[in-house]
Length: 141
Image (cartoon, rainbow, N blue to C red; front, top):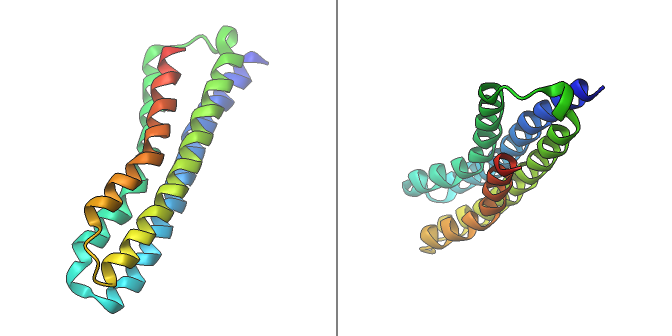
């Protein structure tokens, strides 16, 4: 049973972080598509902000890869790995979605003519921080 929990935790970490990034980049990407109709000259700013929520999916993938390299004993550490994987997956899921919303608002404001790209990137880093903390904590446990 512990072995199943360990692999389930691994899958949840990878899957939930990827789902969060998919949602976050879609939220920001939809805003970018709308913004292109207003101001095409700022397309590079839209693209950068649309890509920011993709990093949480990378954390899940790197975590998956590092777990495979560490060679955990899933039969012994299964429950612990399940908890860690679930926690990292949920943190990445929600931080990516919320980061996508922050980026979408920044994209809309850039399209409206406001110079807020730097500020938006700073605000978008705040939800990212919690994904990073969860990722780091996973390897300290």
